[in-house]
Length: 200
Image 1 (cartoon, rainbow, N blue to C red):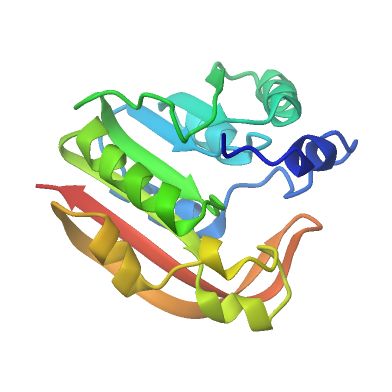
Image 2 (spheres, rainbow, N blue to C red; image 1 turned 120 degrees about the vertical axis):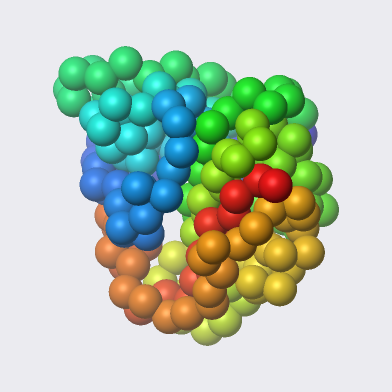
């Protein structure tokens, strides 16, 4: 079991912890996503799933927090979009095989052992030519204190990302600093790693 009950506490707050607008990297690179069927991992309160659904994607969003799912359903309802929300622990959730045109993971805070296995399953779950898009905190984020907590095990470099996600061609793989302004818990200059990989 990977779920930290802290997430239910955070998502039970009345406001949206990370805002209701999509992640900047996803928004800037959304045209790189292929097909219609998108799986969003650790979706949280729904901001990225709702954004994609409004663009016409068929979105399935997974998160372990029931409070996060409830907030995401409210956001989808207010936006007038239909999304399949699934409450599940990604440590043992079956992503399927060659099922998704695109998979996204935006600031999904998993420790290295789980993350490496999940990344392998992501590639298996993509159709050939499918796209994996991710943004996460890199280890330098520990010095910024602008989001992501204080567990460096949940942060990774672009080298680690490339090692963990095999059988993709990286069209974008960068480690950089950028302002991240996403609600109360992600605000300020941050150290991130970004990747867009196409399954070969």
